[in-house]
Length: 261
Length: 106
Image 1 (cartoon, one colour):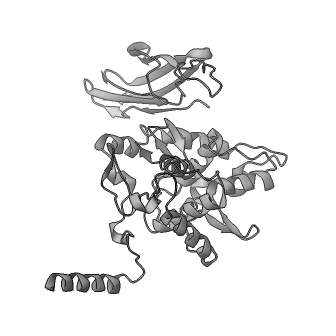
Image 2 (tube, chains in turn cyan, brown):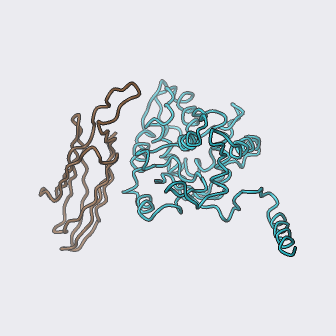
Image 3 (cartoon, helix red, strand yellow):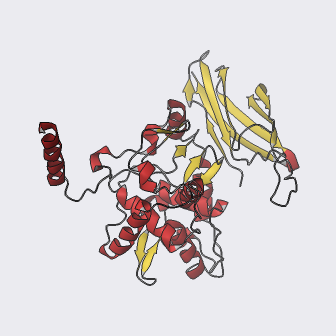
């Protein structure tokens, strides 16, 4: 009896302490970057910019930033100047609300909107080398900066939609993202540690992929893993999930380009 | 766009053993994979790497299909004199890439 009472009291205390926290969610001060789940070798690879293969893409992105293209004959740098100044902290608040479209857009989508509207050039394909290089270069300017995505009040319904998708079971294995990444992180799936799924380092270099990849690619591979039909790149569901994940990591610092196994 | 990242200590004492790291961008397509249609994806790898220290070769490596994309090489040499390290990667389809870094030996 007293044991049951103690549990009830503990649960009541928990509810009082964190009223906004729902069952199974990770308390803000217990959130951990995927970095903390890795071995020392992979950490060392990420920490040294001359051994981090993601930096090759960042270098290419810097070249592309200055390249004039499209019918307008303009480079990113012609309007935005030095990315080290103008792009500082930008990736940390993406996906961001676009007033003209009335919905959130990801950093990749923003790059393509700028290409088609301002530079009058063809959009880049998702996961193409150039799009990854540009987004890595831009996101690298936010390294060490706290994530602020989802702060815009207009984003609220989209964050909520993303949260629903995160909690929703799907696929033949009937698993939700939350089943692994909220409830069972720090355990193992086969030999690999289950992380909390905090998107602090995208686009990131995955050793398994042998290339840089976006958060959407990572999400799609998880969806395929639970035998679900993966959402298309840039679909409203994908953007909502990306937005929810970034808002879930609110206040954590960016580490693009991260290296992950 | 072939780019390389080189890590050579800027300064060293004469006789010091120094570590040199070289990372280059390359897909390292093995030549064993097939497309969805069953066609073989042709091999496209780096086949050799060499490093010269003031003109004298100090390290050479042959690469094979099992080496990962964006290969990273680390090796040691002795700091003898101030000068230049030159790196060269040679591969399939006429691939060639070079990079260099300088060192001051006191």
